[in-house]
Structures are given as structure tokens and as C-alpha cells.
Image 1 (tube, helix red, strand yellow):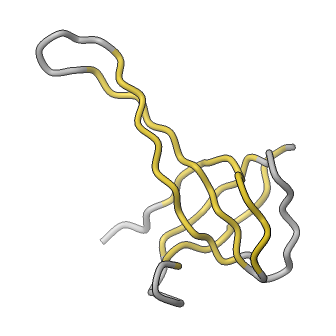
Image 2: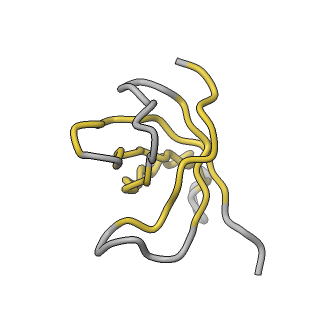
Length: 79
């Protein structure tokens, strides 16, 4: 299986070694072709605690680390 990677924006960094990332995707409605924006929140493992709120980050899916944490931080793109 291919490894899932995506880009998102950091919306919270208040936990230890964990950040919350919001990933938005745009899709077209099947019937009306209107653009629909959906947002998913993911808990991401940030070992060095290097991210701040508003950073754009690249994340990768991994094995479960805790109850909700299944993604890890690859790199910080920009602030």
C-alpha cells in the first residue's frame, strides 16, 4: 500500500509532543458541480515540538501511537 501524505495547517500545539492539524480538501458535488470544502482534524506526533499555530506542515500516516494519534510530522513547510 502507498504511504499517505498530506498538507495541513497547525491549529493547536498545546499538548506535549502532539499537534492538531486541519486538512482541507475541495471536491465537486456529483450533481450540481458546486465546490464543497471539507475539513478533517488529525492528531500528529511532533517529537521535537517545533511547530507553532498557523504553520503549514506535511504529515504522514503511521501505525497508531495512541488512541487518536495516527500521523507523524514530516517537515514544516512555511509559517
